[in-house]
Amino acid sequence: MTDDNTHHGKVIDHATGTAKVGHEWDGIEELDTPLPRWWLWTFYATVVFALVYVVLYPAIPMLHSASAGTLGWSSRGVLADEVAHEKAEHQGVRDAIAATPIEALAANPALQRAAIEGGHAAFKVNCVQCHGAGAAGAKGYPNLNDDDWLWGGDLATIQQTLVNGIRYPGNDATRSSLMPSFGKDGILTPAQVQDVVSHVRVLSKQDPANASSRRGEQIFADNCAVCHGANGEGNRSVGAPKLSDKIWLYGGDRASLVNTVTNAHAGVMPAWTGRLDPVTIKMLAVYVHSLGGGEAAPAPAAPAATPTAGAAQ
Image (cartoon, rainbow, N blue to C red):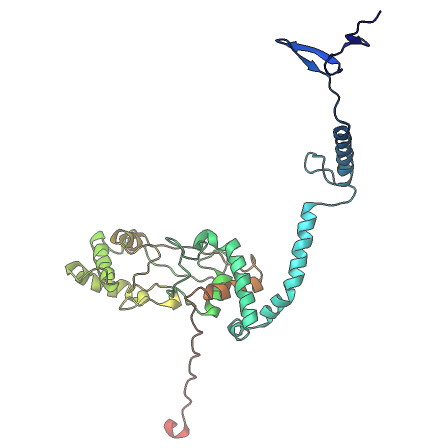
């Protein structure tokens, strides 16, 4: 005779008619409630989907890569296709920029805008690490928004600086200048360094003239004016900064100036030729020129006068 509370050896809960699993804790027993049929079919579908995915797409990790999948699909391949598509879409504009002299781009506003946008994109990838996201620079890295240029701020000069860099090893055409370490190399005594700094601070209108600056005036004339100019106006042909304003690459306070005169600085900027293609460099130059301090191209030098017959007599 069968017990009413059992069925095929399983204990049945009278209230629900569901078998019990045999677990009990503090009088509470667990029922062996079957899963809903829709849930089971959903689970089976996900298992089938996973198996198909593993066959079709990269999925199984291996030592150096993953299984390729029978479709040959990869996220890298998709990216490469998208990049190739973007390049093809913009190739016409790039070809037009390449064929246009950099000084003539402004005559075509649409091409100029495209060059600025392309240069901005390249700047965010290659230049912000030193010059900052807003191109405001930092100590030792020039602010590209102002009109204070070491080598010149016209389009062609900016482009040349980008192409060849500053003091960049291995590039014979790199822009190069070398300020002596006047204090470290013993060219000037510490007292003379202090005096010439006093004179520089007078030139930059930070301090009034005093006995130290008057002594430094002659030291400056003998050692510094050949590059920086008699009145500290600077010399772009050798990359000598202007000293008569209040824009400083390494700081204009007395301690910073003493350090500069004593030890000098020789910052390096990479030559971007070989790293970036010529069109990207051109667009970068246009973008930097557009930031606010860009200058017009210098007027060509007047040809030398040819003596007339009368003058030769």
